Amino acid sequence: MAWLLPNRIIKVFLQLRLAIWITYFRNGSGSWIFNDIRKWFTLSLIFPPLLLLLDIPPNAFLPAFIPARIDHIKSVFAIELIASVGFLFGFLGSPLSYHSPDRDTVTISQHLLIIMYLAPRFNHAVIGPLRARQLSPKSETISVIYNSFYNIVLGFLIGAFLASPLVKATLSGLSLRFLFGFAIWALGFKGKLMHDEILLNIERRAISRAKDGEEGSEVKELHATIPQGVMFQYVSFPNLFCELVQWLGFAIVSSPFPFDLSSILSLINLANIVSVIQKPSYMFAPHLSPSYVLFMAEAAMKIPRALNGHKRYRERFGPSYPTERKAIIPFVV
Image: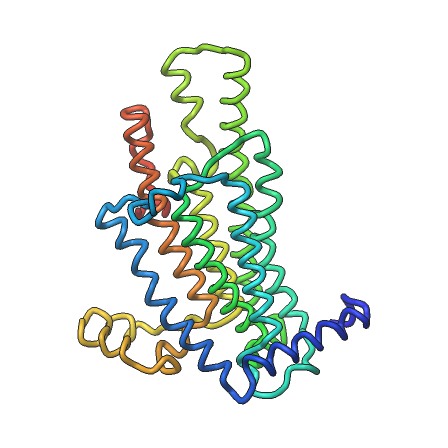
């Protein structure tokens, strides 16, 4: 890490890292905390799809005195700040280290993984709002609350995992898996930016027309509002699809695929599912790394969101909306 930071900052970094580790994670207690959080957070991912299946409004559980919608830009910044705090606590504390991490160095591969994790967060929290500063969107309050919890937990898990001796040992060089995963991540990241820009341009044109008092025909207005171009010809939400691709690439880079075919097929049996849930946390899907938990969490959040949005698009535009478009995954769903 010395090639990136001056010695004084490195010294503060190491002192803070040691203080967190001694206070919370020494004598192996960190691994128990890590595995407990990893297990129960993974199991909680059933709830977003369940809410979609039961058609429960997102604000159904919100007390009446709390506003149903809040400023989107401020809420996004707060969520990503929370995620960064969770990540830094997990990375600095290094709960999976059984020995004092005060003399640990951060490898080039770890640096790259940190950038791959934080770059989309920075884009979401800072660059995105700057690009959308003309707009004033709102977010569902309950979604902001859930996303805050979701991001701080995942941030901690990812930070702890990237600081672990396992990642340091297995990512000592640039393997084919590393390069393949990085290419997928880069494609997803670029695709997300590109499709976000298309959506922002639609909003900007709508604001400009409203200011100019332009009145066009209904058909012209519909076709001007329906997103077009690149992957919009296949899915309604290519920006969300690209996010999934991005985090899949991150998962491929950081760890091997956690399941084999037999273990996946075994979950068809309800008794096997119950058995997996009842196992101690350290035995629960032992090869399931936080990076794949992140990918699963993104899928659990983004797919229901895309399905709901796709349904609204069809209701709003009717026959004018392209019938061949899927919601989020081309040719699938």
